[in-house]
Amino acid sequence: MITRIHIFALLIFFHIFLTTASAEEVRVAVAANFRAALSELVKTFERETGHTALVSSGSSGKFYAQIKHGAPFDVFFSADVTRPQLIEEEELAVPGSRFTYAIGRLTLWSSDPNMLKTDGPTVLSKSHFDHLAIANPKTAPYGAAAQQTLQALGVWNHVKDRLVQGENIGQTFHFAFSNNAQLGLVARSQVMDPTINGAGSRWDVPEDLHEPLRQQAVLLIHGQHNEAAKAFLDYVKSSEARAIITRFGYGLEK
Image 1 (cartoon, rainbow, N blue to C red):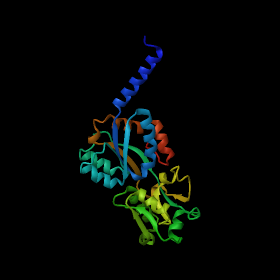
Image 2: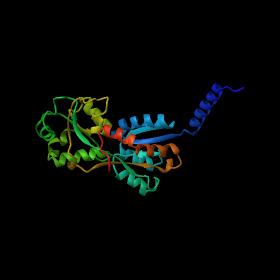
Image 3: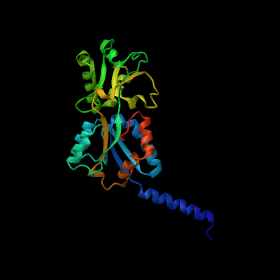
Image 4: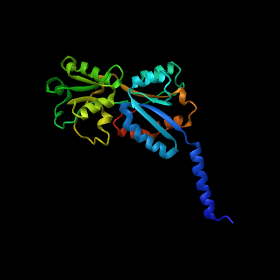
């Protein structure tokens, strides 16, 4: 005779079996600035769905080139609009899947808590520093925004010989964090990462000094039949996910 305990155990077994059987893996390419926020999103997504996300981070420009050459990613979180739009036009993405998941913010940051006691333009034009780190403007949207900011402030010629360029915004932040550069134009989300916990000093760049950092995601053709990929993009649009994105210092499209 089957007892209630046996029935309960069987139900748990079948629940675990069905969840495991239906779980899939999604391969995510993400711009370096969004890596920390995405890690937080992945934790909740995996816990709630049973799916698994494999994440690769780097520069948006390099991911675009890799996707064009057949890299097996399912979804792409770019730091700009241009690359996802090109991928869509080149029929490498599922039509209609492109959306803005965050609005990036640029900040001038130093690991030295006394470096930015005055406003950013004054520090850039008058302070003594050896190096200023920015991301590569040709491949990283945050690098392009950094160059636009320096030109808008009229300090480009003053600082251009002291620039050190990171391949992406992650490497750029490392230059500033390790004090290989006394200053860095980095993503505000990096400074607001809980592991940094407000260390150093910063000046948030006004948004009108550079083109908007609208960051878009897209479902790639490689992932068009992947339920985990579609579920992950749906999750990123949820109110729970948007709250996490905001907590990491990003704006949201209304």
